[in-house]
Length: 327
Length: 276
Image (tube, rainbow over all chains, first blue to last red):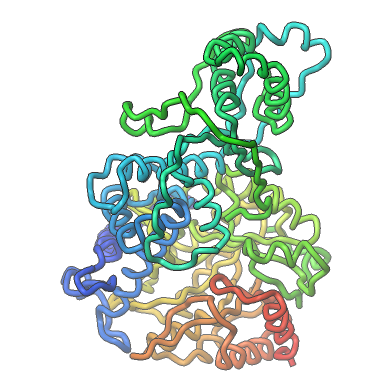
């Protein structure tokens, strides 16, 4: 006996291939409701079926609907902000187009949404949103998807002996945080959506654009998941620290500031770095440069990387999400 | 083959399917739940938070694993990498047993994330039994197969669903995870007598029984939705199953439109009532 190694008989393989095609048959949208199209199920499959209490094709319709609605639900939960900004109807249409080309293949159903961010960011179809707003919303959802999956890492807690040489060292960033810059208040809108304060399937209006873009640190580190609104200089410093030794990062930050801002920097910088260490943004020190994979639209098309000249934000606020909420 | 330790899970234990919305109630005050059943795949991914929450749950309740992606009757052989992940998780939570479904879920590079039936023919009894025996051996603990809710039947079938099911379990030397709601749903869709199904089961090999709610379709038939309370017909089947072969561990599944925990607790309370 080959114990678990046997393949299925060829007739079963052929039958399963036909059944799989029927399940993945796109739903009809012409009536304003998503409906199976039983006339598209192939005759060769239907001949294999006994008529049930509701006819031969009715059972296939149930599987067909389940396939798509289960996946639509997953895509909506993986991209909750995009789904509501464009509305479920249009979002499902985009999801169907994506899944038609990239059907799910693994046992982790959430991975069905892998690659959807790139697909959306490159999508040229009508969404009712300014393109830049769509791209930012896509990358906010995608950032959380990645943070959610980031492995747990031991946070860096500098020893007293390391403090003297710290300035020449480079901090190694944990994989559980990113800096996200927004031109619309998308982070807050996403939080409200997840809290259930805007129920429904119709598009939610895009809030008015911010006077100037602002940056957040999004993090899922240990037992803490949340978002920290960053002062523009704090955002720039954190970004610099991800790829430069501390002293060099501080020097670059100082150069970017006005004389008045420079005077206030020492006290602020100490607090910003201390907070980032406390939150677990770093896992250790390295004397050499590291290449950091930044999450941003630049990964989608290589062109639209977020600018980091972001000024303004009044006060740093941090919201820590419910650690029990694992989706 | 490993035996089910009665000290780890009582034979008349009453359990609940673990879903994230139930965490606060289960981790708050003590609840009348003897064990919890997790969806295996929810804890195999890279995200650390589900595993951390699972550790907290496991510290308070025995946990068993219920998979949806084994793909026992898929076109390709069993995925050994997946199986090893399941074994590790089972070891991690010290699961008394592991279960999955007598079905296929995908093939040719596509996972349909649904539990799909096959024609009930002797040739596939052999294939399913060979694979199930292998799974049980690799998991090194009792492995149970659940019967499906199904919406199609195949002309090729030569056996009743229950004959197919019992033959696979017997040949493999594995166990039944008998879902009474699925029997009811399939009987409505295919027009068989659910009690005839029950009478075919060797209850000495029932690892666990599932209870859940389903949705009746206005045009006839039913869909397995797990989004409401258990209906009278399924409770009646439960009474009969208990009379035929109780005690056995019983688990309530409530996956969608989950009500406040008070209502879930009331539903769990009915289990003892129907045991008579």
